[in-house]
Image (cartoon, rainbow, N blue to C red; front, side, top):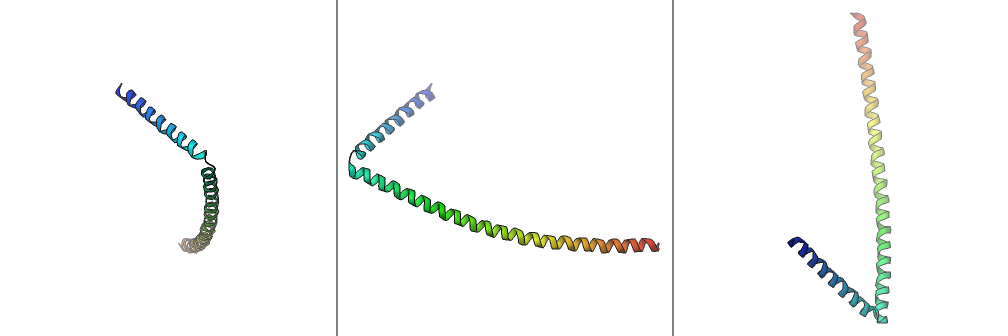
Length: 103
């Protein structure tokens, strides 16, 4: 029962805060200067956000190129190791086969 009363109180306070915010916004928006400031701030925020997203895309593309280069380099190194291992196994197999024939 206490939790329900507390929840109702929280909802009532939140409602009052939201209502007050709407009232303040309504008063602020009734003045053309304030509306213009809000429009200007919104445009600036949009422009800044787009610029940051473009910067993020560019950084992401650069990082992708670096990662792809590292993967290619590591893949080439791994291929060399595998080829070397195959050669070594082939040589060992030939030696073992030759040793078996002499037995």
